[in-house]
Image 1 (cartoon, chains in turn purple, yellow):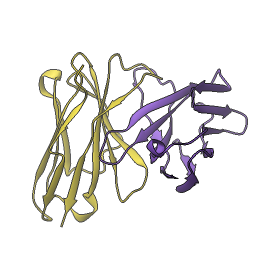
Image 2: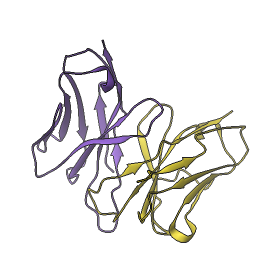
Image 3: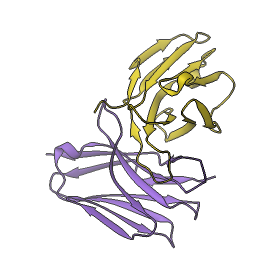
Image 4: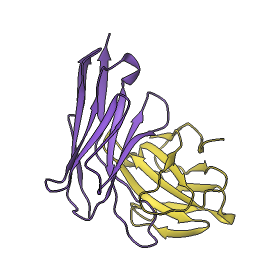
Length: 115
Length: 115
């Protein structure tokens, strides 16, 4: 089955700096890669996602890149702010008939933005 | 729009006891998923309902876990008898159509502690 590795497990950055989280996946059939942000005590929320027919996607200060050949994808947060402090999860899934959207998650990255 | 709601938010029980977790998906969402995060590791898939039917229960760890979704609305996940290794955060998620690459909406989770 699919295996998703996520690094680093913790990341501390100074406010205003950039943060990068990297994930690798094992199943070349995976074609959907969402990123979830979980603030302390709150629900995981989708912040950005990318499909395998796209190499990069941006939404304001966040961007995701995908390298299908190398089977890795990354989350980039620019101009970090204290409210970006949270645990970030990458995930992968593939199209399987009638199987819904079964996500395989990475282990999570705890990001701390220091003011 | 109300989000996915889970009850209780926290549960502390002793080994050998029974616990029932409840999830109310977003109204109109036929697809309901259970996931859990154990010991700060990755979030792992448990099972997927389409309406009242179990579509995929490949992630259920053993027969101490029983999930139901009578009537295709809310779902319950019962652990009987609970073991120490069942401690973790149990998440529920829902989606409208259940298609691959479809956005999942997560609840805030139930923190289960088995002592």
